[in-house]
View 1 (cartoon, rainbow, N blue to C red):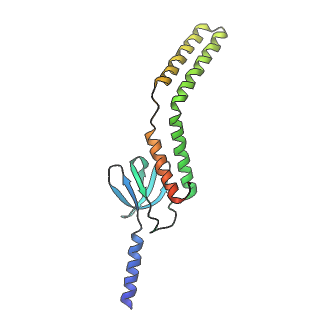
View 2 (cartoon, one colour):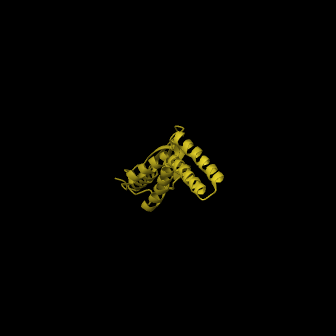
View 3 (cartoon, rainbow, N blue to C red):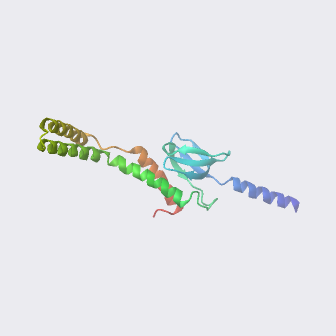
Length: 167
């Protein structure tokens, strides 16, 4: 009877250690452990060896959460919502950078025109010229790729989907 209890206790103990989420890193390595937190730039992961380490999202290719072994949420909804909000805002700002340059140049042209109409002709012409150059640079520049912010949003969205917070 005592042997059966020890065997059962050992099986339960090793079953608890087998809880493992998996990080697949961009260099091809995998890290087993458990997701314990996140922010807009890092996943906080407790590897099987112990401790807690912050892993930059830029180094994570994908994450797999083992829901069968541990059905509990890994992070709180508020923590995830804060992280995804910051990451999405950075992505939106990156995507709007080109349009901001164009609008800024057009505002300089309008400001220069206004200065010219107020009797400051040479200075207004200078401001309009600078605005025209900035506007043309904005129009001619390629659309930014925003790879890093997009990658962070993808990883955080996957975590939200896994938790059932994004439909």
